[in-house]
Image (cartoon, rainbow, N blue to C red; front, top):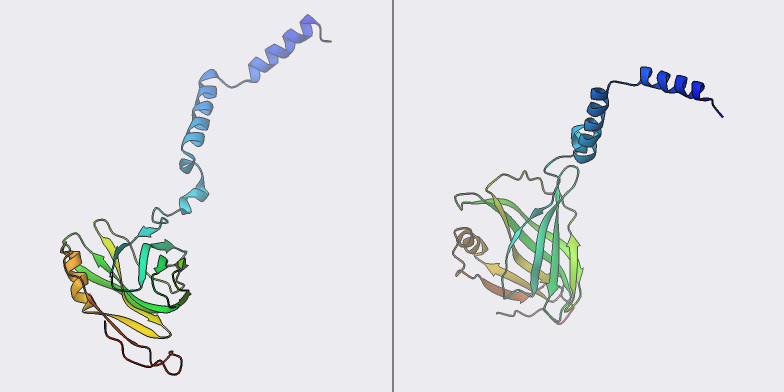
Length: 203
């Protein structure tokens, strides 16, 4: 064990080499900043973009279609966005594709088309599914803008449901007029239908 004299020497050496008290306080203060605000001191955190969040998309539901979209969003990837949809099939037929349109509504309620695409998928009768479409969408979100999605066509092997004058209904929706509901025309699918079922069906 150290004698009292030796212990006194060790304490004196420690005090002589210790940083001043104000420096200790400064170090502690910096540590607090690092713990509470790590982005201020972590250089790797500077690569995180404030636009890395997903973008929600409004859905204009067309009630006469057999396919409903419960949720829609643009999921951010490294270079673009991917469209994610929660789908529901209300028919007794397996659905194999859809055509959709996404438009931008600016602060003046003006409609700007963004994409209009046809995508294939598989959704059994009366089933639900969350689907992420792999075709990239390049889009830069801006303040005051909204996105709206509308399904314009639904395809099964037996039938095709087509929305008539979809653009007119979407433009009315952008202006806040929700009374314009598009008409849906159902016809036989002459390309994918099984033999013997190529008849026209109007709805």
